[in-house]
Length: 112
Image 1: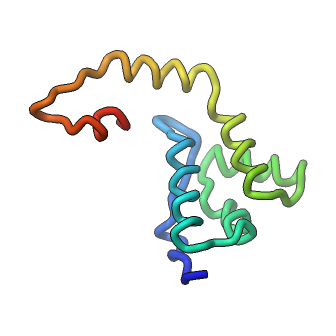
Image 2: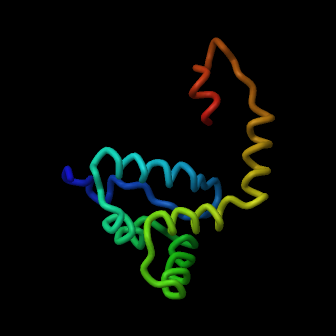
């Protein structure tokens, strides 16, 4: 394992406002791949990566279910925050946006 990034370099997640839980998950997946970080280290850091309402949610779930695997936590995050309101907001945002070839790169526009 390479030396993993300092905690301040990891993403945080609040679960409030304009959140993107999939970006949070994907960023941690990339850190894990790039630095060969074991699942146990990632799950041990979750209490520091969640903030505000997400941290309250984490403490409740952890107290109820105990220590779990990284894949279990990923699924719980998706189950909690990939709700219909989030999907609707993403779909509407995509439908309202339009591609401007002079201003946007296709991949950047598609991923926003």
